[in-house]
Amino acid sequence: MQVLVIKEALEYNTALKIRQFYAAQQDRTVFQSVEFYNFFLSVPFYKPLYLIATEADEVKGILLAVLIREGNGMLALMSQRCVVYGGPLAASENPEILQALLKKLNKTVERKALFTQFRNFKQWKEGSEHIFEQNGYVLRDRLNSFVPLQEKRPVALQFSAGRRRQLKKALQTGVVVREAKTEAEVDQLYDLLEDLYRQKVKKPLPDRQFFRLFYSQLVAQGAGIILLVWYQQQLIGGIVSPITSGISISELYVCGLDKKFPECHPSTVATWAAMDYGQRNGLQYFDFMGLGRPDTPYGVRDFKLRFGGNEVNLGRYGRRNQKIMYGLAELGYNIWRGLRSRF
Image 1 (cartoon, rainbow, N blue to C red):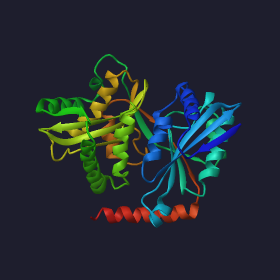
Image 2 (image 1 turned 180 degrees about the vertical axis):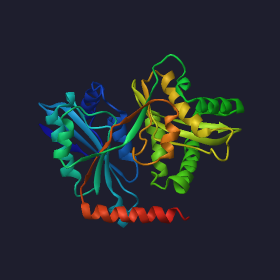
Image 3 (image 1 turned 30 degrees about the vertical axis):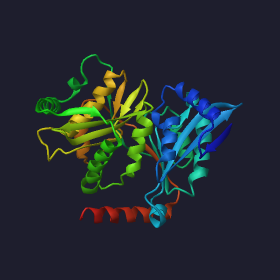
């Protein structure tokens, strides 16, 4: 078993082999696709790594990881982490392939990233957890919810009565949803997200270019959609959603001016719009991409659970690659969040 680490643009034949393997995996997600690798390759402060496990020149497994940092200099040193969304993909979840990919990933990033995190989108089969543990990973609880979209009845009928009333009222008020048509509209949505993250979320938000490239690359290739919520020609909300063709649509970023436009319920409309889009386009389910820790009160979780769906605890695998630096970075991050809460 050989594992190749790719850090540059993919050669045509390599990309073709990855696409063929990817398409054959039932548990695939767009976050492990060639399209997302190329997207990450273009985003400032993102460095993707494509690990390809091969045997007799045949692809047996893939792992798309991305090194993410905030800015340059000391900030970059104290913030760089390695994140794997919905991977790896291994033929028949073969333990030998999984072992080879994890070992190679650790060796590649342990001096570059403070920690590595796997954001699970599925339940790993029995035995896989032991392989993660062997490679230094710890599974921590993280909730998520999936809303099925395959029923013939409108997806909104799965919502709580309160959510349905909000949606009906918003549409009657004159709220309109449509796909982003220009980069300028994407920038408008970014401005809303930036305010939300600065004032309330208080977590890092990717550079503006992340969203522009999502639009120009992923949306153009059918691997994503940006839906905008308008009221009287003013943008009041929206959602950025990756799409796994034929399978799922996800909530990557969402926002709404709910306090400023209480009659319009833009966050509710934006979330419904992505579900409705997925249902109309034959996708199987909507993925909220996280509901927080089960032992921690989280208002966002309460909001999301009123859209119906199935709550699950798939957890996240994490590994501290540089324990001392990780501790210092965590302290610095908590101080940073405290300072942001005052301004």
